[in-house]
Length: 278
Image (tube, rainbow, N blue to C red; front, top):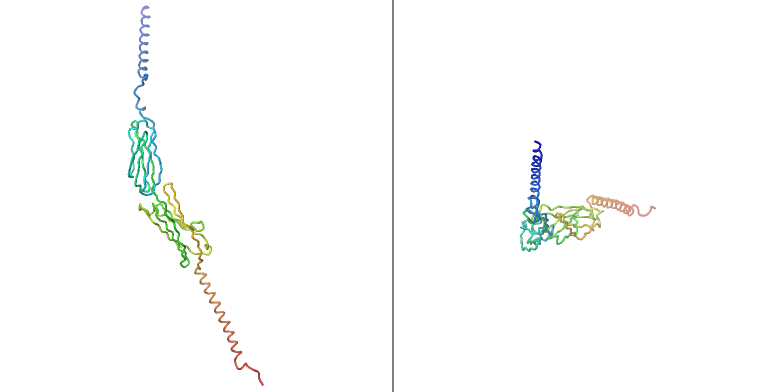
């Protein structure tokens, strides 16, 4: 019995050594070798960015624009552009592609650029706005009709009319403003605004101006007319009645006084009052 105990201990120690060595071998087999190993699925994604330049561009109706799509992907698999606008020429180089968009007539368009790298697709967005600043803003000289001024402002060759606001100012203060969002046509247009302003003495010599403003998603375009001065003072109905009454009263008084003097003169010229008695 005593001789079997050391042998049993040796067998147990050998088994433990073989188990530990096996575990160390399995761990070594899983560790990457000098040349590396196949990446796990979480390592397949390659971080990269996609940019489009410019991100915002305003062009006249019917104009064209170039957009550059670039990325940091070392080996892009694909690059594309998504837009409803008409496309023209295309140029490309290492890490970039330039796209031409022609005959831009929609007032606002969204353009998206996509790049695929290592199986992952990312994109960037640009906004294209087509507009035409008014060729002119003209305020006609004020016309006095009765007790009101008629103001007429002309805004010519503007686009898009639906985003136009026309404002009249007197002495720097807004007296009327109109939003033309009801107009939806996609072409250049002329706009005429007519407004009647009550004539008051305090408005005499006050300058009046017409202003046109286009507000296009952060882009604001302003134009204004030369000032016109209110130089004619109109009589309101109340002063007219008062003036007419005053004139009638004065004329009546003069007639009464004149009749009294005439009667006195006639009496002095009558025969009964000429010469004295015996």
